[in-house]
Image (tube, rainbow, N blue to C red):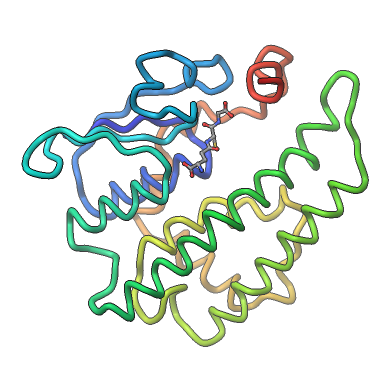
Length: 229
Ligand SMILES: N[C@@H](CCC(=O)N[C@@H](CS)C(=O)NCC(=O)O)C(=O)O
């Protein structure tokens, strides 16, 4: 049983989706990021960057326990462990890693900032309704989704003709495109892929994990914990 340290956000969904798709049994430990659980010294031993998701696998390398933080590292570890969703050849693996890194360094941080400046910052006290960062991150997310659309025009999945951890890493942020003030009319291949991904039972199960706890960080206390430290 893998221990999953989780809160229902796009970064958390990457790992809950992967565990569901890989049919690995897991036990969920909630890390309520609005309440500050990510700063608990016991959690910091597993995830020193005070972010979820993280996992502990009691059956790690050589049969010994291992902890892993950073969603991209977790996806790669789980794909190696199971031998699934990483392609079959070295060329496949290069493509998976290209698009996984593209998500980790591009879509995740940029969409995260888009959410921050478009949704959360205007609700702060005093409001931070800032045109420059709103435009900057909205435009950059749109550029990234344009790159993805062109890639998906030629490939069924992001790394090629096979489903991989790269798709799993992108879907959560991409599924929230409306909150990032994006349009899909000019991105038919991205739209096709979003619909295909959303129909997968593994994606649906990972997305549903503790969905009832999803919040909007609208209260002052969680804003202070998340945005002022
Ligand atoms: N690069 C990290 C990002 C993880 C991340 O940003 N997690 C957020 C929630 S989506 C978090 O734990 N935030 C807590 C905080 O900001 O204190 C990953 O991909 O695992």
